[in-house]
Length: 61
Image (cartoon, rainbow, N blue to C red; front, side, top):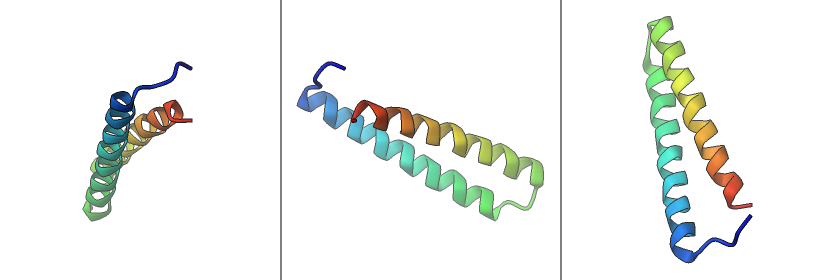
C-alpha cells in the first residue's frame, strides 16, 4: 500500500468516525423498534456500515 498523505489520513479518520456514528445510531434505533421486520432491516444496515468501517480501518493498517 502506498503511503498516505496527512490529508488522506485525516479524511479516512473522519469517514471512520462517521461510519461509527451511523453504526451506533442504527443500533439504537433497532433496540427501540418493536417491529421485527424493521428491526432486522435496521440491523442489516448496521452490518453494512460496520463493514464500511472495517474496510476503512484496513487502509490504516
